[in-house]
Length: 482
Image (cartoon, rainbow, N blue to C red):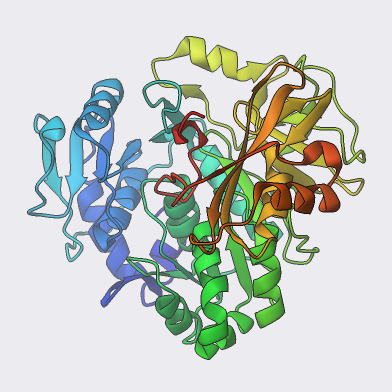
């Protein structure tokens, strides 16, 4: 029935999807998605109201069966952002659960209700070319309106098959997660990944440590999360023995979408004996690197390049390659492979500017590379690379050092202009005890003792909370100006 999801035809009674107390087998998913796909034959693109529900999963599978590019919509987006996405992507239909009240920005689109109980005659769906678009996923617009990254079908299949190799992912695996479904992490990896393998996924709806303990304790083998979730897990472990037991029995714990603080990584490993695997990807590239299931889960690293993906670090000129092995040699990550997007929709200028000669995508992420090829990301070029006193310093390692201080609950590091140093290091701290925050000189000494004197923060600012997006990433551009 589908080259993307062969289990739709071969394993009809096998569990496929479960959201709370609602579930579908592969046979039921094939019927519901097939019936919906038949209604999409003439559509150019289909917007999907991407709530964490069975309807979203069925809607996306249906669009892929029909060869119609899906445009996942974040239900929390404001009216202006939704209006921009609809105008830019020009979908013919919007898919949502029957009875859903949609914002005015979607009012002119033809509404197609997703009936998860629908059934229809089985049919063969012709497989589009590998270069045909599967998704248009909109990036967070930190420097302007969101851009639509066009992801071809080969990017989806190559990434999921590379992760099968790296994670030893099989149809026997049961994945649990509570990630949103408008993003590549929760949707493509977290829903389509299990379906491509012929396994199953149990979505928590809303993340909770109780839900994680329940599902991993009752047959689930893998957990996907973001650092905010793993931080809550690390905090809960001392008081939740069932959570410790459940995590200890998991085959694979995977963190992504942002760097997992080393402190949380070590706390989870000490309590459970299981080390969290980190991987690195982007909307435009899907997955680039990962710690392998049969490799060393080295805290602070995102592993090695996935099969088929080429990764290099380059100097500021964007061309000169930096050899592996120098822990102080920070360079921009560039990637090349079948996992890449094809273009920013309607933005040929942005598309051209995103690639270096030879088809290398400029990620804007800065990293160092260990002698054995493990990649350590130190931050974004625009916000996390600090040039101070002649040194190139990554914010990430300073943040990890600060988080090891018992008086620090959350930390972010940025740079700001300095007449003498070029840039000075600024630490933004959420204290563990707001009544007695750690002193600035104490934090500076703490960092200098662990890293190097030139990496100590020169300024410390205290906040009640750090600004974060829906995936838990710290939004440094939203930090108040000093």
